[in-house]
Image 1 (cartoon, protein in one colour):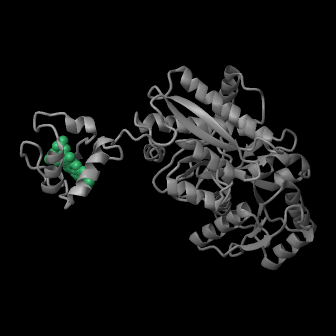
Image 2: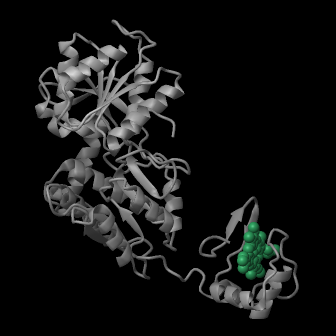
Image 3: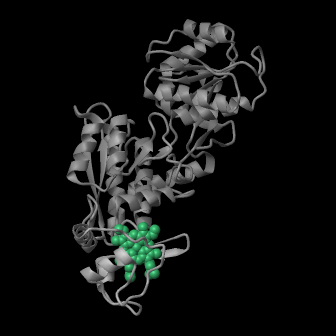
Length: 448
Ligand code: HEM
């Protein structure tokens, strides 16, 4: 009969609404339900008046005590509001860094979320409910998990735009309590189901795109088609996800398993890269880590006379492109999952117009864009979830989003087995003079 008892139709059979209002009301086909009539329906499949209920409706063997519990439950079915929901408001939470070095990012995200909600509220809210933003500092001593716990204890329907570190214990708690989270980006390995929906692909997806691209290329120079890639990565969750994506995609394509070299940020020696590349006859280097170490990769390969291409995530180095050597930009194939060209110009123009209209102070545009997109997804899903705003309804509505235009991102799609809205990337070069990203491949999708 559906989570709130509003009725469902499955397999061509309609299970009618069984909310208290509906059961109390007499209809053309049956009388009103009393406690005795409910017992006859549930135990014997008879409606008030004697009509036999459709055989799909099970007959339950219940004791009188159980039946009385059931009647009590049905009496408030659909009335129990999920956490954070009142008759005229829905609270959504964001765990953001509001202190410490990342504070500018956190407060920019907070301002954009609250401006996006204010815009909806100015038009009357969603099903007459105003959106309320609750924010907790994720840079405090208890970190993201502590901030999220405070939000949950304060009562929020869902989490939106949290800077998501991918903490497994926190993910388990959200899964357990079925709290949907719409996060800008997956920090670790991409999960196929659960309650965490992220917009941008994680490192594993980007590495899969790199292997996909490499597989489609004729090997030139020394290393043949049979040669493996060398994955150079930091030993953190993101770096491990990068390595595991490369391994998985190579296995999927029957390519030789990549070799791996892990390093502490800031500690990559050019000679170590050159040595590993030589040992493995590497066809390409897939790099995950800070921009300074990316420069060491290039120095190592150049010093050893290796022409192998270098793949790296644009997102992880873009803000530090200044430290890249002037020759590096053309040499590295950056993986980029955002919009390019005309669409990028149009959507960033639209975002700037929104920020001006909303009176949001200029800030880090990437953080503002991510928060804007997360807010648009949550707003759309809340609209589609219907008047009875529930966590389950919201999760189901997110799962139904297909090619949704959420602003300055590629179209967003989720599904039952897909929690990454944008599942792929294209390859770009950075123009040395302007720093602009120039597309060097078409869009490459990966399968969920
Ligand atoms: C504890 C669980 C359930 C309760 C308390 C319950 C309760 C009811 C009640 C009170 C009605 C009569 C509604 C009316 O006359 O307006 C009904 C009808 C119905 N139920 Fe359930 N139900 C339960 C489980 C299920 C399940 C698991 C299914 C299907 C898999 C189902 C399918 C149906 C169908 C198809 C009808 C319509 C029958 C007809 O009008 O001929 N119900 N249910």
